[in-house]
Length: 78
Image (cartoon, rainbow, N blue to C red; front, side):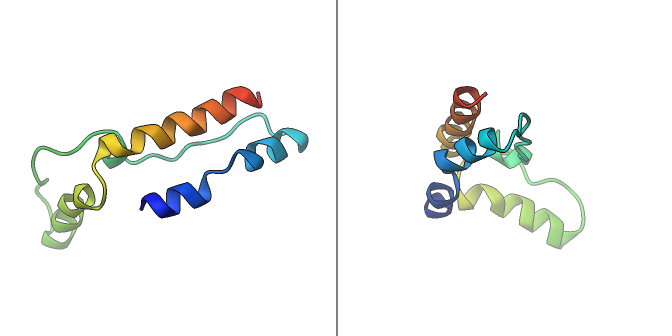
C-alpha cells in the first residue's frame, strides 16, 4: 500500500491542476483510513471479514502522513 501511495501522490499533479484552473479536490477516504475498528462489524460474513481485514493492510495511523501530504499540496497550490 505504501508503494502505491508513494507513487500516486505527486506534487506535480497539484501544480498541473492549478494551471488547469482546478480549485477543488475531493479526497475520498474510508473510515479505515482514519481509525481502526476495535471490533468486527456484524453483517454478512464476507462483508464482516473484509472490514476486519482492512486494518491488516495498513493501520489507520499510517495513512496520516499521506493525508497531510495531500492537504499540504492542496494548500500550496491554492
